[in-house]
Amino acid sequence: MMLREHERIDDLMRRGYQIIQNENKFCFGVDAALLAWFAEVRPGEKVLDLCSGNGIVPVLMDARYACGDYTGLEIQEDLVEMAGRSAALNRAEDHIRFLSGDVKTASELFPKGSFDVVTVNPPYMKHNVGIKNPDPSLAIARHEILVELQDVLRESAKLLRVGGRFYMVHRPGRLPEILSGMLENRLQPERMILIHPNMERDATMVLVSGIRGGRNALKVEPPVIIHEAPGVYSEKIREIYHDGRH
Image (cartoon, rainbow, N blue to C red; front, side, top):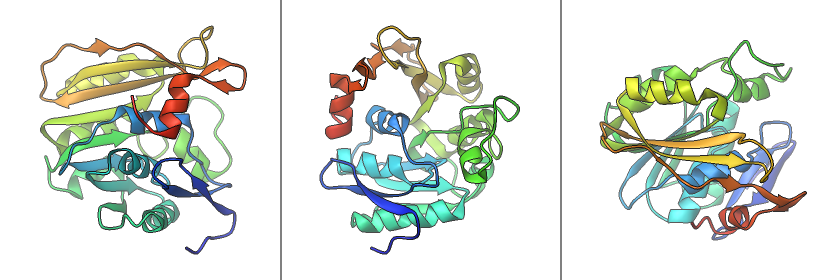
């Protein structure tokens, strides 16, 4: 497997799976691992991962479930090419593929209602909030420069079949927009988990799922704590990183 300049191969500690990452680009963090743990896929289901980056979420989900057919959509062509090499590295090219495209017009790239599951780890920060990274690739990953929350929710709803499942990781501060936007697009919120850095600090991430055309009430599940002591992952995070099981 050929590596480009500044690239490395990281062991995902699940069934021998690995990921190629560029140390000068946006490398995956705990949010991607949490999303891959939170999302569920069943045999024969088709999964679309929006804002796919280096492809970490489909690769982690395949390592965990050993089933499903995955498509990752990412606008940055260099990341698409790198993600494709990760699929090949794991001998998963037959069921994990990555395409270059704009999330804002994703429903023009695929038939409507053609996916059972949509996952997304989108940019968290609004375009005009915070300091943007001078590196364009990192800025695109963190700020809503090329895609906004409403684009993600609209296109996800169009591409999910009725009864299909939507999974997203985001920031708690944007929950009002997330929940109202999901309802506007008939993505009925179903599950929510708040993620805290430790027992003393406020939540910094939230996992939210919804059902296309669903009617169930929202279930708020127990929070996940990342660190049980400074520099020490909690038992739950160790489980998520090492085998992905609940």
